[in-house]
Image: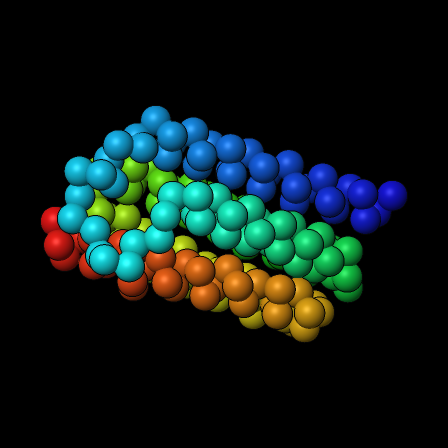
Length: 156
């Protein structure tokens, strides 16, 4: 029962974030086509594949962190940082796609990376595997920040 509750505490907000981000992107799908993009910019379908895998890993890591937390304070802290990273994750889509402000989006994604780093450290204190499961998230967001978002901001 405890694990099911933790799955719901992580899967539902993650799904809401993923759906909201997808809607924001879909409503502004023509925007990237108006920009100068790096020559290595991935095809659109790859973003959906990577984000799906990353979100699944976030849910697994977060569920495991909540389930293995040794105290109420540790669980509340893990849940807090989990929710903060979801907010920052969604805000990037707003900054980049809705507001069409690549520089603001770059600043925001750097903050997202910092929050993910904090989340990784906090989860690692609970169970090392939880931190390891977040490595693809860090790698993908770092790639998106410094090899996609930043060059797009500079080029446009």
